Each structure stands twice: as C-alpha cells, then as structure tokens.
Length: 355
Image (cartoon, rainbow, N blue to C red):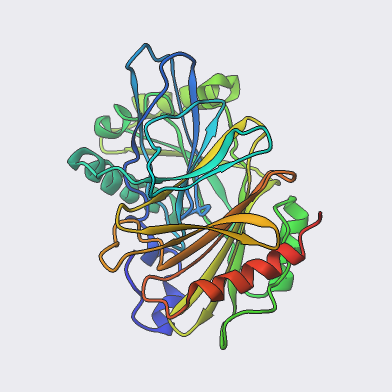
C-alpha cells in the first residue's frame, strides 16, 4: 500500500489508494486426513472479504491458499483455521499461545514467498474487485462472477466472489451506533492515544453472506445464476454482479490519525468452528509475547527491510476467547510510535472489555 503523500490526498483516497498490495499469496497449508476448512482474512480489508477453501486432501495433498487483494487500511494478515491441525510453522522465533487445555489457539508464522502466479492473480483480482466497488454505493455489498479463465481456474471452490464498499463514519459516536445496529464487535474509544492522534474514520463489515460457500445451496444457486448470465452474455461482457442485503457485521474498524500517521484498531468476531488464528510476519520481523492487564498478547515489530506485508511498523494483538474476538492494533510503516504507545491503547481496550 503506497504511503499517502499528504492529508488531502489521504482523505480522497482512503480506499482506492490502499488496494492491491495488501494480500500476498498464502501459499500452502497441509492437512493429511480430514477435510480442511480455512477462513482466510486479509485484514487489510475487513478490511476484507472472506475466502473459503474446501478440499478432500489425500496424504501429502497441499491446499493452495489464495489471498485476495483488498482496499482500505493496511493492518495485518491472519488466518482463522477451522477444526484443522496445521503443521510446519513451529520455529523458535515465532510465538504460540495456548488455552487452558494446552491447545494452540494463536501463533505467528512466516509469510510464504510470493510467486509469479500469485502476483498475476493478485493484480487481476484487484482490477476486477475495484471495478465492482466502483459500481457500488457506500454500504452496499455484492456478489460477482468474472468471465476470466485465469481467475476461475484458481477459484474452483469459490467461483463467486464478494465486494463491499464501506460507509466511512467520521465520528466515533456514529461508528458506535452502526456497531450496535449491526451487532458488530463493540469497543470503547481509547483515552490514552499518542499526542495529536484523533479519530479519523471507522466502519463495520458484513458477516459473510454464504459462510459455507459451496456447502450452501443458496451459494450454489447464486453461482449457477451468475455463470448462466456469463454464458449467455454478449462477447466482451465479462463481469456479472448481484447486490446482496445484509444487516449483521462481525468486524469493526477505527482509524486514529495525526497528519499522515495513523493507528488502526480492528476487532474481529470469529466463528465457533475456529480453532486457531495464525498471524503472518516476515522472517526478519521480531515477535514478542507480552502480558497486558493479565492478558497474553503478541507484539510484532517490522524490520527495516520488512515491506512485503504492508502492515505497518508495529502490531499488537490478542484473543478474547470468552467473547471469541480477535483484537489488533497497528500503525503505518513510517510511524513514529513505539511498542509502549500501542500498549497504552491496548490497556484502554482491555480495561473497557467485559470480564
């Protein structure tokens, strides 16, 4: 995501200027026995639509994870793993958080290297997704199908994709009203922000319209409808959309800014089926376990050469297992903030969380 040049440019390009580089190809996860279900988020856009992959792997089968580029604020990349045991990530420089039963519920892992194929997919996806968003009004959510063989060959398990154009809310009180209306994760306005940082904008993001994708007959019917339109459309017409109604959200976002610098807060509600959250980091980044108000948290600081994730200089996050929420605080790549600054914000959020 390109660094914004000035405040006026940032105001006009909050979404369109922050599009295609947030999601890198997540390459591989391996699960030898059971059906692997993965809920993948680019939290650079739910910041984000959900990508579900489903397969019946045999031993040694590798499931390709396609992370799709999004719009909006660069935050972080994570995976929610549903009922799957994911191996191959354990390393001394990465973190693991266990629950009272000893199960790993959150870990950090090295981001796989981006391939030429994933770069092509990312570019193509970004182009089509932006075109869909350009057709939407703020707050509208749509399903779409692309007549593009290069895309569809990689989208066999989710041929119909989704796009959302957030409604930017310019006051925290209006964000809170929208959070309550849509039952999005609730959090209070932090009081210990770094000097000069003020609420900039916020939004909520719809719950996935078809959380099981091809498991759901409604999703299959939608796919059949849009693919039929594509088959019978005149030559040269390649994008087919259908707007969707929605009233529930599982993601809240708030940005606080001072000039070109900012801090993002995201709170994501994860489904009961989720058993593990994986937070991506570059190999050169440093990861540290913290305890804040009795809660275990991860802190990741990007190295001087760490640019590929486009997720900021500092990241701090934790799980609220009781309420099934994932909190994340992050800043921009050239941020002047320190770990201590993010810790103070985390303390505010933890102090206001129901126990």
